[in-house]
Image 1 (cartoon, rainbow, N blue to C red):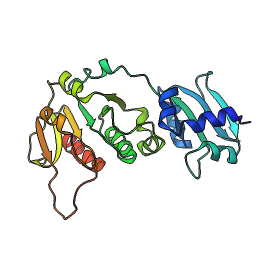
Image 2: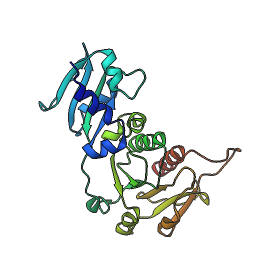
Image 3: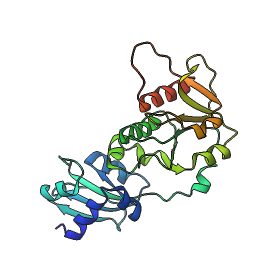
Image 4: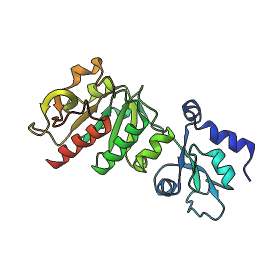
Length: 246
């Protein structure tokens, strides 16, 4: 039986301010919750439809059975799929996270604003084996339900951190910073290292002016048609693919 307190708490996590206040977020849908339960993320509670079974490893995880009407009240989706989980947002120490990039590729998102782009970039990074994605502190909330949904479980595998990007670049001057621009060196003809920071700018304004001095290599994806621009997540995928192709 779903209590009013439980309903109010879960619904509060639809909003960023409460996710930040409680350090918790929602994972919705059968497939995503099953992936969550095999990850290292801590799960506080599972709200499931009658007849649905989920293997819970931690006895501290509360399992509440609900009916379809109650699940719909809990969900951010119009047609929820069987289950909703409340998970804990991993604690991150910004001071440590800025300097732990070794000889590897990492994605840096500067003021990314669209939840779909953020989720797709995380998912694409997972596909190409890029283990870290850094977001500027003013980027979209990656625990927004839309980001969680579009990341398709990759959020539980790729390490995502919010950092001061200036500090990140300062701490990693041993790595090249590859920025994506409308005008730059053709990515297909340019020498690329196996490691480095791939910087993706804001959807409308690109990489912010204060970060431009840190960019060591300006890359462009050549245009063959007449589209005005590329979607940020698509551009990120093309760049990651080209790095891995080498």
